Amino acid sequence: MRETDGLLAGRSPTFGRILELIEKVKDLDAPVLIVGESGTGKELIAREIHDRGIRSERPFVAVNGSAIPEHLLESEFFGHARGAFTGALRDKPGLIEEAGGGTFFLDEVGDLTLPLQAKLLRVLQEREIRRVGETRTRRVEARFLSATNKDLEAEIERGRFRDDLYYRLKIIVVEVPPLRERRDDLLILARRFAERYCAEMRRGPVEFTPAAVSLFYRYPWPGNVRELQNEVQRAVILCGEDGAVRPEHLSPKLTPGGASADEGSAYGTFAEAKSEFVRRFLAEALKKCEFNKARTAAELGLSRQGLFKLLKKHRIGGPESSAGPKA
Image (cartoon, rainbow, N blue to C red):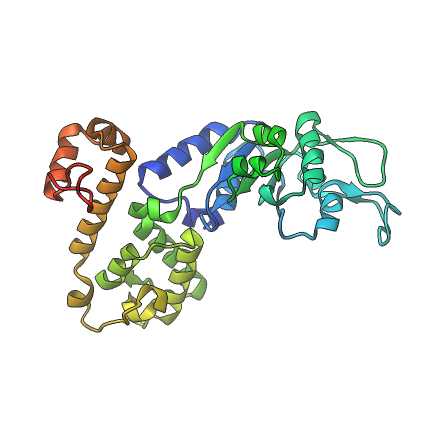
């Protein structure tokens, strides 16, 4: 199973749009900026763009802009000549060169210093680099992908990010939503991760009980897909030989009141959990579309009649109701 398989599964409209965009950009040379909260899987999206495209047989080089000490960033990105600084004992190509013909992925691009941003802009514009300590330029053929969890427009207003680099990076933007906005993919993702960890641990399959599923849907997942992945790994380790993941196998943050042995009464049935999810999903979709039901139906891929039936079933009406309001 590829590393991306856990993330790229789901049936939400947002997930479908991401897949469609990946298909459109996979073979292009244009830069792609991937934006989203921490833990949403931005690097996995970048890897999927690379793996599905014509560069898949070439290197995929990923680097985190906030993980390398500032004084080493330029040398790491562009390389250096022997003797360029203390400790430079030999010529060394940079990471951008090493991605030659493939993909260079820069995560946390919003954390780069302004001087390094200027040099990166030149790379994108001229398709060439200059190693530290050299005067000659070298042609680079790597495709450039970047990601950030920051609001770069706000960073520009604060004087911390170059607007010319921003517009060069955002030719194509992939917006990765937080997990709380793709909750209909939640159980699909959890099962994918469970399959992966069961295979790694060489144990039989596991299944989430209705009580565990209910807790999954109630939790806001501030750590997004990464947090879900870690939670599933924990559950697979802790659950018994029967393969049933119960509330007591989940971390305390998902069970703030403590795990109850009476799963049905404490957490409701799966049908109740599903109904609660559908109610919240419809309410959020209506709000996003400013309570325009025709727009909401089109956004969700439903007929107007189908949407009206769901709204009636779950007692959802106009904006005056706090739950997502009643008819």
